[in-house]
Amino acid sequence: MTMNNSSSSSDDDVIELNVSGERISTLRSTLTVVPNSKLAQMFTKGNRSVWQSRDKQNATFFDYNPVQFKYLLDQLRMIKRTPEIPSEEIIFQTPNADIQTNFSYMIADLGLNRK
Image (cartoon, rainbow, N blue to C red):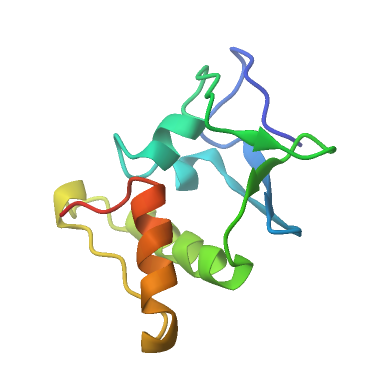
């Protein structure tokens, strides 16, 4: 199912992403788990974001390294499982030192950095 902006959308909608050519599916609630982030705003129910680029299959396109993006999604899923941690205390971990700069830029682009 591709994201649609209808009023029937829910936090459990499956969102189709195209991350530099790799198809990734995740739940809307994963993408919106950090409130007030650019990423959350992009996928908030009913928001027709101007930030979104779409591919031919109507999946939201991100120009990021898909391995790094999947690592970010894993961290967002962990945040969903631990709601007792305030969003201002969330710190995203880089998978390894070699890609720290690129990962940090992706976090900043998506408005997930809280510094």
